[in-house]
Length: 418
Ligand code: UD1
Image 1 (spheres, rainbow, N blue to C red):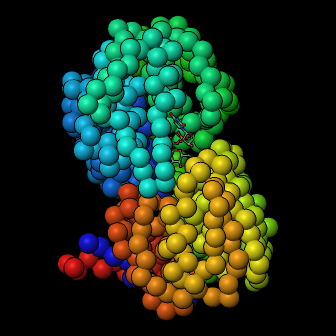
Image 2: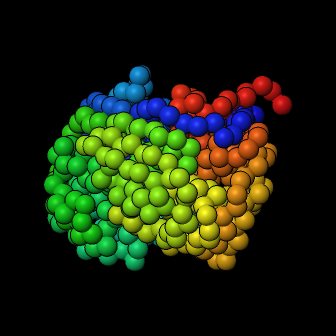
Image 3: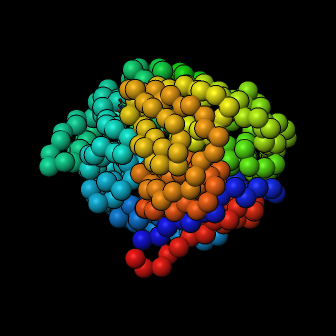
């Protein structure tokens, strides 16, 4: 099984180009299933999750070709509205086929996602929302079955602005009869792009980027092309590493998607310079401890919480980090403590007492973002770190070790057997 081996404390410098956003491309791919014809998606990151979604596209009957970051999906041949357990269990975002396939076929069968490394992740908002649109939902042998001849517009108010449920309902409602209003909708840039994409496919969606999305159902959608937005979580991961390790510049990035992180980095003592599509960071001379609480967009992303904890392990004092989006997302803490970090946790809060230095250690990835935090810790630490089970990181980061190596890090992938 592949490992990443890092000799820490090499300074970073130079430029890194940010890839297209994983969390944007996955729902966009499922939206393309709603149209007859070929949709082209550019700037698609070559990730394990993108490949899993391509497999799912092919299982439902779409034809896909993926070359040099450009993905073509032909939705004309889609004929099997079913997402099997084997795929859904490896990638929860497979659940995004629920809304589009139900809208297009009037029935769909999708495996119920299980728990995940960071606690229970229910899908009740997706299902309640679809029921409001008139779908009949049943559960049998671990599969959700949804049926509706044609969905009907309705008013849906989410208890929490779920990214996935907003995406699923927007897609389902795009071709429903009448108007759907989603209150307390997610405002994440990836949802904004999904809505904009649906509009280029012929949908009529207003209130995009606000907490109230209004969808006037249309009869059908047509194929359309799009370029995926930059991955703000990949960008944030590199910025957090740069916060301590050297002056680096990110290109092909959207700084406005990263406002809350940039504020926190400045508070910690880092220098930040932005242009329309680049961000330069100068590391802090004396990294200050900065408390942080995750929140839905435009708050601090839960997907950058683990990386922030890694940075704070060597700040000059104590910090308190709370995750309000996922209450159980702290599997990185015991691994970071293996580097000599001093972190305690209580419910959804981590208490980090900065130490002078981390010492390299063998550690294990548990999920995508936790893995990124271990790589950051390995880059900061003195001596050698081995990160195993890195298939998690390959789900969400494109060539992360090559990108860090190009910035001067001493980091390699070891794929020797055993
Ligand atoms: C998406 C992102 C993930 C990110 C998360 C929060 C993708 C593919 N994944 O996940 O990287 O960490 O947003 O920004 O885009 N909830 C329910 N019932 C539901 C749905 C959600 O209770 O039906 C709760 C969740 O348990 C969680 C919160 O709502 O506490 C937010 O989850 P949600 O926004 O739905 O996350 P995902 O779409 O799964």
